[in-house]
Length: 297
Image 1 (cartoon, rainbow, N blue to C red):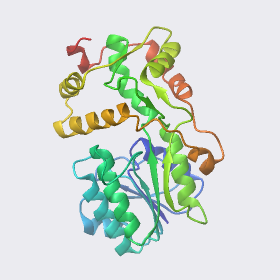
Image 2 (cartoon, helix red, strand yellow):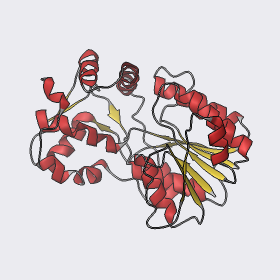
Image 3 (tube, rainbow, N blue to C red):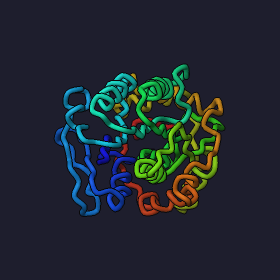
């Protein structure tokens, strides 16, 4: 029995699709009221559970051998993950595959990296067999830039000349599926990246080629980026966390490239150009659905 948390998100849905043809017993832990991913017509057990309630988590993990642990980006994410790890140990889960973050470290400056680092360390000390997957920025984040591209023909991010080895979320799922189903667990921590490191002007050039029109990188100041996010309804704690992440990019902390996708899956990591091609129709047909339109470059 393999259990999956976060199965309704970008990585989770891709992971469910990967596991559908590989495992006989699949349990999807979903928040009450959420719609679980359809594992290609295969029967999966869907268990509504409030992951902040330890008793519900323990009941949901009864009989599970391996757990994929992914939690939403919320305040106190480290405490939430630590509590779930504790319940997994109490429930007798034999192995945990945890989705962490590239650069995770308990002493990191960026909140996202620091909180993942703390829960990663807790997992290592728990005594349960484990795999920690630390992916870099998702290529799928480009979908969040579409309203700004519609409005300004620009990608507005405060990243300067930073280079990031962003990864396709489907490659993360493929690695997670390989780890969860391996006869011998590939224990330890593994940094996951795409095949190359790109600057955001590079990314904008790729999008320009796909769109057939010029798209530039609009290098915002940190205060301007904060204002833009605030106008879009992003809460202050999340704005602070994102700005810390962008600052880590500017320090060169997201530039490194690894071969982990190739080692786990036997194939190269997907390129950003390949992912961008999937956005072609959307890039060529802009529509005015942007709350960002209140700002101007």
